[in-house]
Image (cartoon, rainbow, N blue to C red):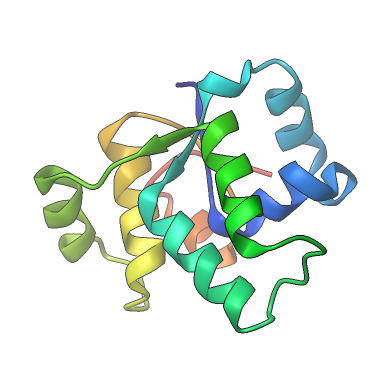
Length: 128
């Protein structure tokens, strides 16, 4: 893999790439789909957002999640990621953000995110 997507970047990648930052669009254009990763926690977070209607989709959540998992690499939580996530000096306790950042760190991947707290933390290289 070459890059990990934060949850909020996924709908842009799959539906509206113009909403991505210029740098992230350039990086993604140079990646084959299998070089793009997503945390398994992001899949769960997306499912929650779809079900709550916080992300509007024209197809079923099941179809969209299947499309995502068939096109990019899903990175599983492991013990090292879980421990790192609990120890990160992030200013909030959001478990999704913690696992996503820890996943990027574990696999030495830049994270495509515009999340200001993650960017400011400098815990991982970010691209937007």
